[in-house]
Amino acid sequence: MKYLDALAQYKLNTRVSAEIEAFIKGLNELVPDNLLTMFSEQELELLICGTSDISVNDLKNNHNIFDNHSSFSKVMSWFWKSIALFNQEEIARLLQFTTGSSQLPPGGFSCLTPKFSFSSSPLRNVLPRAHTCFNQLVLPDYTSYEEFHRCLHLAITEGCEGFGFE
Image (cartoon, rainbow, N blue to C red; front, side, top):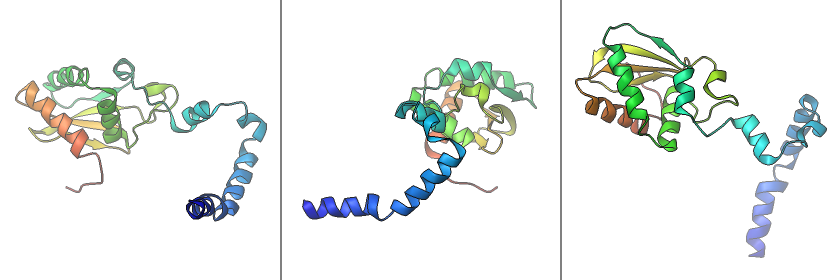
């Protein structure tokens, strides 16, 4: 146990001590230490990583729609109906799929830049796509709500990693 403790201490502290000291020195040049110490660990995490509590109502109030087809309002109503059934993990996956991050900035969707947006697709009955550089979710038209919900859920659970080429 002493060996494992010493090995862990070396790998996690001693081996990277110069890098950690350089990081802290650079951070303190930007943000003085006395300003950092006024925050708790949780508050600092929130400032650095954003919030993990994602509100569907916040998204409803802070998004753009780029609609190219008249039937898109039907698809959008299916979208709101579908995500009302999502738990926080599924909403985080939707956020990850669309923006590239499962976290929101402090302030929620209103502070997301660029703004979360929706656009229609000329294709039918294919999986939704996302443009993470633009925080844009591209929703095709479907023949039924059930098919829409299945495809959206499949896209955010199975299609949330990596890049694809068309």
